[in-house]
Image (cartoon, rainbow over all chains, first blue to last red; front, side, top):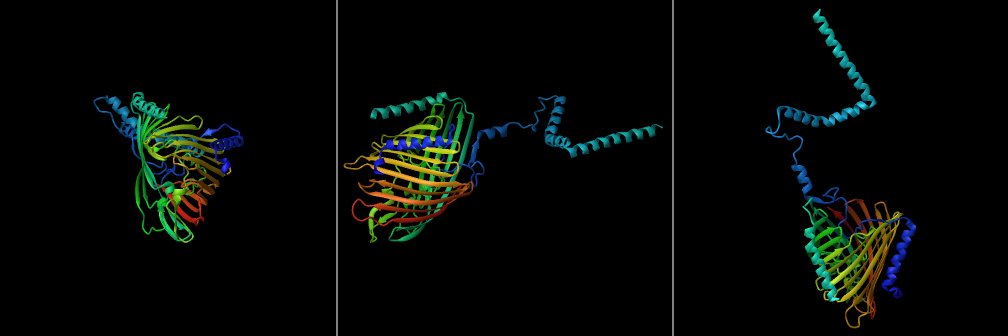
Length: 139
Length: 353
């Protein structure tokens, strides 16, 4: 091995292996971030979870926590009565939004369609019953 | 050469002074904590005695790290603090030892960096530009066997046939010539050019380093390569060149090689050399490898030291690795009979927390 002691031999060897790898791949190289096995490995940690790091401070999270949520009502000094009522309805809608979306999804399903049609039929029957009662009272 | 070093230092200083004016108001600050514990159980035989040890795996020591960074428009500014917390390092074990060894509290990184479109500037304790240039390794067994073979046996003394100390420890006759390591330095790293990054650093003792790093995937073939140069100047009495390459093929077979040469600034000293080869196979959560390496003329002229080893690493869960390894270290004396071989078997685990 003494005859291979030059740095040029090393560089040529590395170039050869590199060209071999390129030849085997036959494609444009995609850079990747090399990680040494002697450093703290990336990926999840036992205590730190999926990120592998415990976040001591995150200014983005603080800003999100500090922003007023939809549930926090503006002050009465800035809203008219009509605005207040609309905001109350908006809050209620936000709370029920997820349930509403699930309901719509269910309605689109075969089982949901049949059940909803039956519900509409029941509503029509309820209206009919009320009409019948009003007719009998008027007589 | 002194003028070049001075100009380099002034250049980096100028950049560091200009950087604040390129920054815009802060966007996002993140501060994070991470770390690992890495322990092993070792059986060792120096030809005269055998002993067992429970030690910290110096290949990748027990440590914790604190990082913080914030984006200021086009400039990312961050800090990196990292400390070893090692009890009974595997690098410093001795056959005479009957206790838990020393506790080492070492600063690995105390670094500030400025990451810009023009490259990354660093100042503080951290890797020099040639650090890790001997250690490119895609085998998956680097946690227990890699080119730094003295990390698991550096303190063991070679013994002559009659049990008398030969006068050389493994750590004195084996080195992978991996730059200067970590030091208080200023460092510049270029942006990545298709996977290629260049780096240069300057440290106390007017020592400087250059490094080039390349990592790319060619249709499933992963290639990692690096070369480095060190001028130790007043800090270390040598000039040094090093390089390594590792190729991981799509079906799991991998080959790794490292080479280094050191011009020692002492009268009548021959050039020292380092060679290292590893053949490995990775599949699923398993990795196996066999290695062979040697140094020539490192401690004294015409003294060669070599080793071979096998390793197996399994990663059943992402944060947890288990490893098993066997290594044998040999010394070819410059004169007289060769000392006994040193053998070791290790089993252990690294856990990231």
